[in-house]
Length: 214
Image (cartoon, rainbow, N blue to C red):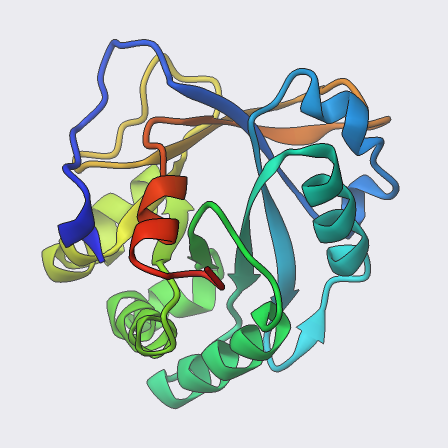
């Protein structure tokens, strides 16, 4: 999917968009207020084998109604590529009937995945299933994990959402489209939330190439 975009390593320049990523842990969100300050939100759709986030439907509907651009993510507990394929199929079921202006990300954080040396394999398996179903898929992980556990094929083929909190720039050595830069506070959310910078306008790509439900 990266062929649709020109990707750069964004170092020392201003971001194009500000955003958040949310899940059930934020509870009820006042999305019209969020929309005054944030351009995009990446919403947890679910995790593992078909577990849907309790606030997924509400967050999707209310964010879209408020005019916030949305993406989604699926948290992985995979222990094999066959597990990743199953998680991808569950994710696709959750995405059906919806439209996403930003990518669908595979969230890979579990130490067991890194210790087993399967991060690249499951990322490739998951993302290829989503791509075959016309979704623009990417990978979320920490800067250190991306540098250490993912091969160049995966990092170059799929768009990257890198997490590195409270740094001047991410320590990740490759190109990325979204940076989760800290945990903080955002208008419209009562507690803490992950804060993100986005560097690519994904929406025209989704619409032009009929991806992510368009």
